[in-house]
Length: 332
Ligand SMILES: [Zn+2]
Image (tube, rainbow, N blue to C red; front, top):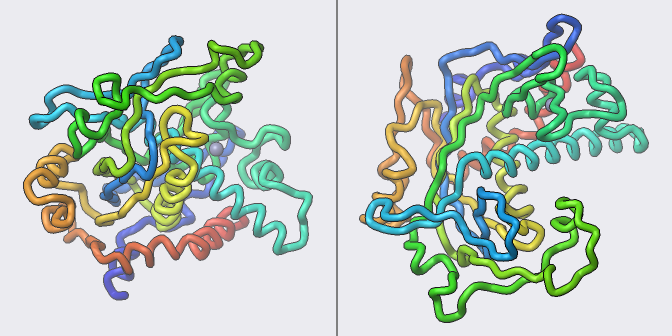
């Protein structure tokens, strides 16, 4: 328990997340400290996963791959895609917390947009929309950042950094392609994809597609760094990752792209290693030994590193209390 208290002492106060009024507009701007928190983990696919960063109009989908990275071809899961899905999960998580609180207080009809109008200065019908109409003031914009390019040229910077990651397994084994005996899969385009492309056509032969996919059981190590971190950022991030795992990443995420994430370490220091180092360690002595390699450093003080499962869960469990502190800061 002491280690959690030491860990919390190195974080910024949750009150720093409350927006300030700049030229008549509410903007969340953290007080920049040199403090960071690094979260390290391993994501394992629980079903088919289609990491696809290129837009394609053909009815064949190929997963992102890199050739000869540390001696293997590997499936590639780019940081921008991780960030996009986790940002949405983080937004939804807090909206649900707001609405469940409203329900507890007996105002069923209010909804999260009313909360935004009150605390973040948004128009009642707008709220905050990812990625096109960000409010720059909310719990989500304060962590993931945003830009308002139109009139006021306001911005709040992203305090969360993601990195590209790659499969531990060789693509020859973990990606189902036309080269493998079973070949590419065949699917039926889901309705949302047709709607998104503005296509009104009825389901016909052209709504079928062939796709490559990453197989279940494929592992991707990941590193996420949060700058000027508060307890709400960290507990919110950890919970958002769990939700994103259930929601799904990648193409056709309605029924693909589910993961199980294991958090290996949370530290108040910068990592002295990269995703590539984690791939190399996994090669040498498999992932059960990964924790023993993880080293962190800070500019001042010694980093506090949580490696124990119970301690990491303990941080995630502070979410409700941290959210209460945030609401209190918004009201003051
Ligand atoms: Zn926002």
